[in-house]
Image (cartoon, rainbow, N blue to C red; front, side):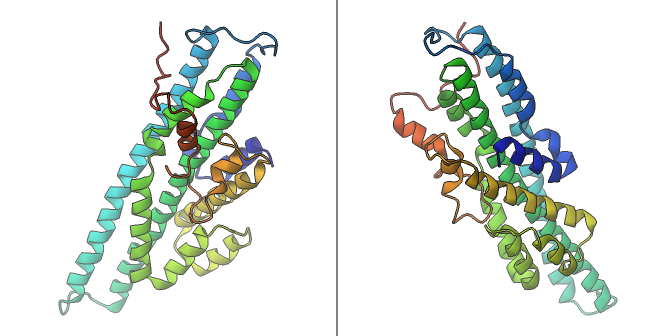
Length: 294
């Protein structure tokens, strides 16, 4: 399946409030068709960025700002919510150790259910955000390759290096938060941890959604997050199979080293940008293509 179709399917299945935060892949493809194609025997001139490239880079910069704003806001929200859940657990332990605090076992069970819903919900959203990072990075690479092919220019390398250092692609803190959340689920709710594990395994099967829904009565909102997380992981799986080539700009390379990552998200170690840096050691990895020389 082509990347554009995989991307569209994922947008249809993700949380509605997230959809306009993703790369504007289809509009960017349409914009590229309005750029005059460069003949093979008429390469672009050297020197400062031409007007068309400056215009296109400006559009991509807007997309980067959109990714960063959304990613940072979500990451901060997760940190606050996760800390709140941990504090609720501690308060519950204190109350449970005091005679007569809980009016009934039902009250305790209801409180634990709410905390469990909170952990499962935030875990699903964090996994979804990791895949948000990966899918947008992959989409940028696809768009940049199309631009280079159409114009004969080489925008992919500097702009990919720029994107690599953006907040939306700095996922290590989020990854640690996901693992801490899973550790808490495993200790507090062993049965629930098994469900979470089934969400994050690499070979997600479509029929799991219905089975898991019946075994995890956590409310429709939590199930929407759960289904969106499954859709994101399936999209990553589809992208891993989509490309027949294997080079630093291919999707096979991009996702080919993910077999040991339960969420399928990119990291600094398996990012193609690391290969770009090795191939172009004489170039500055932080080359600023956001502000072309005048």
